[in-house]
Amino acid sequence: MTSFLAAGLVLIAGITALPTTGPHNPRVSRDLDTISDAVPGESPLFATYLGKKTPLKPKYLKSIPATEPAGPDVSSLNDDNLFQNLLSAEWAIYSFYQQGAEAFSTEDFTKLGLPNTTYDRIQQIRDNEAGHIRIFQDNISNRSLKPGPCQYNYGFDNNAEKFLAIQVLLEISSMAFLTGLIEQAKLTATKSVLVAIAETESRHNSWALIDVWKVNPFAGPSDTVYPYANQVLDLTNPFIVSGSCPKENPPYPSPNQHLPTLKFARNSTTGHPGSPIQFTFPDKANQPTFENDKEYHAVYFHGVKNVTMPFDTTRKTSRIPKEFDPQTGLIMAVIASEPGAPTKETVVAGPLILLQQPDALTLLDS
Image (cartoon, rainbow, N blue to C red; front, side):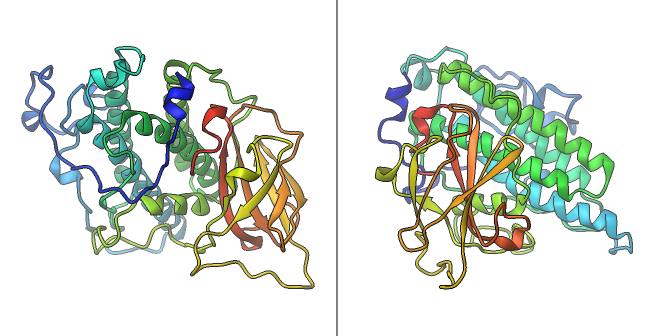
């Protein structure tokens, strides 16, 4: 099953985005338009609703302007910025599942040999992500704009195999930026929300690893912590259709370092611990600059630790640390000007996500 799903998958292929609306699932007897505002944690719409139509009411499917003037509470404003970034990222994740709910049916997954509950789970994860939209909107104060959705192209082109591969990458990436955002949070309540959301995303990924990929769902004693969340958030920008975001939306993420994109040559590595690796910088308009008299490093994050390895600036080569647990979670790599990448300013390029679990997807374009 794993090899069947993994064969020939490419994440971003310049394929036209799927439509954003679709017919009702015939199993749904209720009319969503007649339901009063649902509250996450108090409504099945954000947990067990099955249907192609979004569980979100139209007034939540757009940017929501501030209704009060900005105040002097810098701590609160900082968390408004955090939740603006997080809401913008969540629109991309929710929209992925909403497009999947509209594009597929139970039979699209059962014909791949998957359980007949697979499509239901996709819809229920969509419900959870819709609940996250509402939670993040509610956590942005009335003094700040709540960003609305853009249009998104995930490149799965109505192909259930590609969809399932991208799903793992999105879920595990979301856990990486949520742990980093906790370090940015100023308010204790914000940190609690982020932990609660991360736990739900972890459950989504565990379901996929067990039911879809038939592999060990455990990522070792800890998921990977990457401290610079906005750098991870920036990795979702390629999914956004250029020019499609509401004009009033704030820049995303904010602030954004606009670091050079970091990829790797697939024929140079297994992508697993101990393997050599050759990095590439595919954006010709945004290349890193390496000073001749300065040493640069490849820094790899896995679990709660990071390991610094030599980086050859001429050949663009390094080696993935052999110390890391194999086939667990993910490894994040950056090129840095200092060992350990102790500040976000020392990151020269990246981050790159090396998916380790399932290992059949490690060489997937990410």
